[in-house]
Length: 283
Image (cartoon, rainbow, N blue to C red; front, side, top):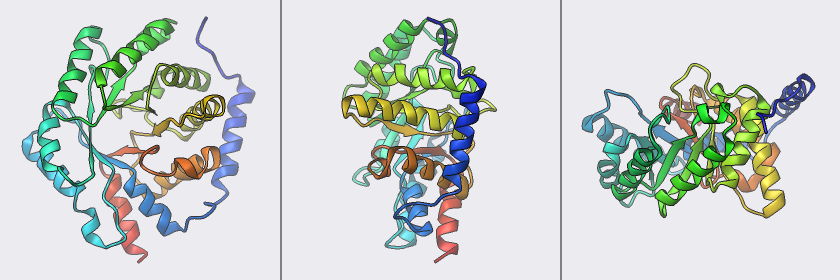
């Protein structure tokens, strides 16, 4: 089997459907309610080579202080860091309800031996990670080695233990919307709790088109099995109005059951403050 491709008419259909969705509005949410929901679904992220204990402390402090801006203002869902900071973050966020998400498994390239990648995942979980964000081996996928990709996800899932597994497809490195949907299907079938668009480490990060076809994969799986899989767009989502577009598409494709931080996350660094500013401006 080779990588499936969307023909041009299918890609046009996706764009047309997105245009229709974006011309509509939320079913039962005001603009303010939608903004607050977005804030509650953010994974507040720093993934830089310059990250250090002081930076992690700053991000964790910020993560738990959003609700101090008003009784109706939520905190973010999680923080997202590299593995060395898992234990520190877990301690700083104790009893807050904010999850500790850790990128592991040779993020962002995935280009390490599988056992090395799995060891990193096990380390992160032992250090307190509630969630693991792994990357698939895009090189293997592009070489049509879908069995390897499926197996690596299953092995990462085992290494996670009780931690939730988010599987990053790095959609900007996949050749078509058809390939993105296919990779999402592989991840879901292999045990992903979430599928995620991007690492944020390449120029082409999250897009609404990629997000939409990943939602279709989740919807198909749910219709077949009754199992709900989460989704996380990440990379390049900075403005509140852009985040609202993702939430609106989520509602129109999957419905209200997915509109919470158990099944929807947005990975971002500057977005949270921009959403808070939008909320406070309209109060």
